[in-house]
Amino acid sequence: MTTQEKLQFYKEFYSKEIDDRDHLNDAVSLPISIISALLAGIFYLVINFNFHGLYLCVVVFIILLFFSCMLTFLAIYYLIRSYTSFKGKYVYKGLPYSIELNEYNSKLVDAAVKAGHAANTGENAFDTYLKDKYVAFVDHNARINDTRRALFVTSKKMLVFAVFSISLSFIPYIVNYFQKKDSVTKVEIVKTYN
Image: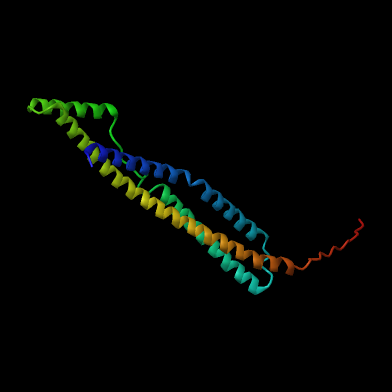
């Protein structure tokens, strides 16, 4: 494999890692929507549940809702971690500006000519420099993407368990709903004369 072929290979690999970064950044919207729905569902259930109903229903409901809340907050934690590290944003590495690369290439060619070598020796040195940069950047960016992907997958797992838990909490909610007794309010009319 020639230096140019290696350079092209690592350049494509680098582009793939940048595409993965963009995909991870764009994938956040669905989990945020699910988290919003879960929090709305938890809020609805807590507001409308009769906590003075059957004891077993109340206990099962509280336990399932507690798990739903904990799993939702864990999903939020892992989602935040997948998007940004708590030390700051994930820092991806990339090539310097084109003008800087061009200046470095010119310096390598000039140095090769001054040393009595052909100009293509400087060009080959520049290609090797680019290849080494791409290798380092691909490795660095792939590690970041792997970390972010693992955290994102963990967040999605927590969301699945939270949805399952809140779905189960509808069972005691429905049982409790049908156990409600109509409350009768006595109204006494008292007529007073002055």
